[in-house]
Length: 347
Image (spheres, rainbow, N blue to C red):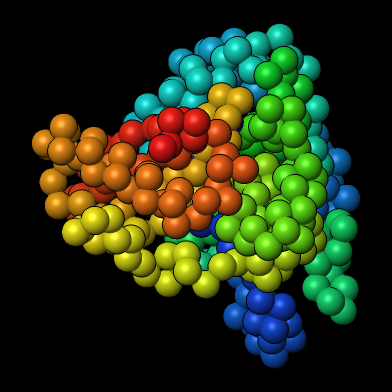
């Protein structure tokens, strides 16, 4: 699965915005007890005027056509200034997805219009779109949580893209500058892995849970979340339900609240994260761990192999669900060194 989360300059900070879970209690308290503090407005497709809706959809299809042609120069010319000055990520994403998008007929989903008011960036801008019920989100609602959002008007446009290698989505975050909607964010994501969509992974997760394979279940729920979310800072009724179901299956021994120890012979490795990752037609599991210095690649390779074998020995159920294991030794600087070992070779 090819996933590109391109930094939205002036909107998103860090490598990518994390997936946000919105508390309904906070939502309703904010809405009804302190309405004067709100500076965010969201209009769903049915709420915005026809001209704005058409302009957003037209801009999204236009930028998709540029991406499908590999026309990076035109995309850059139509980007907001800060993104145009640091365009390498978008360029790489366009190149990676060229074969998926070329010749495809993309279909836009109903867009969203986000309006941030004020005189300074919002530390945490929260947009509640559509109609909410007594239990929170409905089939037509959405929530966007974006850090460090500057005042302005923004459009979220997602297009469904059928492709020979499986369905994809391409989402744009657009910023209004004068009469134009400029490119501010580019998110290309697979909607399927080996022909399997989010619903398939949810069903498999439930099957693993029924068999007591809680690690497999949790990781398959995670993959389902990845496939169902066109952008990482959006939640819907479907993602909220999936989040709740995944949390109920989450094993207590995963490094969710800090590193956990993995003993291998006379060494102890600090595991920082474990997550699923699709590569080509295989779904692998990735384990990252703390490492002092990866410059000695021969030694790091051996430690990666040791970590892979120890992880599978600790969780033998992984053999049933994944095609391989990727171990990545990560320095405090962020520099890392990784090794992929097919599951059939894990002895």
